[in-house]
Image (cartoon, rainbow, N blue to C red; front, side, top):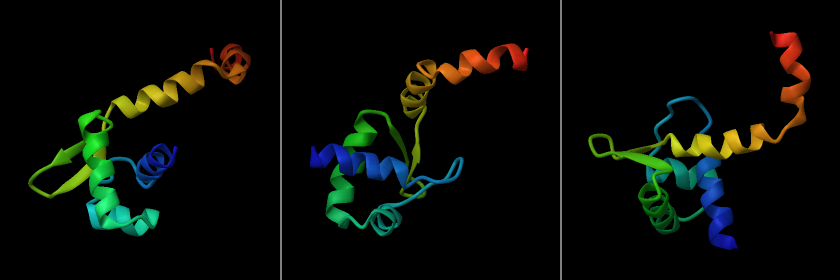
Length: 87
């Protein structure tokens, strides 16, 4: 469970739209060691939750992260309540 929690911490470290972070940035924001960050971003990149830019050696959130939010939003009743007002 610890690895899952740490992986989610890495994803939460991205705070602004389009923000790109390197391993050092992620280590500072999460408080995790650089070696732990390296293992986590490797896995998150392989699972396509992060994309890597070799020119800058930085990571960005990738589109599959959106699937987590969409699944959450789909089950929220506030959408059904707001729909008539939004139309």
